[in-house]
Length: 125
Image 1 (tube, rainbow, N blue to C red):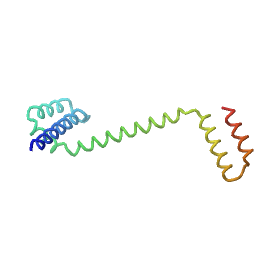
Image 2 (image 1 turned 180 degrees about the vertical axis):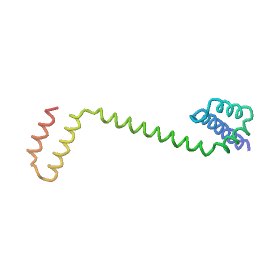
Image 3 (image 1 turned 90 degrees about the vertical axis):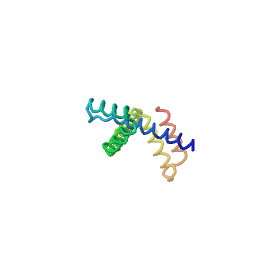
Image 4 (image 1 turned 30 degrees about the horizontal axis):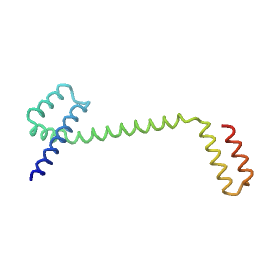
């Protein structure tokens, strides 16, 4: 029974901090609104959290979704920028080596021609 109460206590604090975090993360709420909700949640925590979840629970999920989308877009743009910083010469030589390997695998060029072309590409970089 003690373990159950401990689990519920931890669950309560997670919920309380999530609500307080959502109050401060909401850009559409005014400063007075944030102060009022925070005061309500801190003075009457059980009632404040439950009223907040009833009144603003749906928009809480939408804000989380929008924040995740912004983070995903930022990550994707970072990856694109990092990939664009790769020197074009390195990409070109890699592409040329892959093309040569494909030609060699299909039998379009001989082993000697493949070795000479590979050495020429590697020597130029």
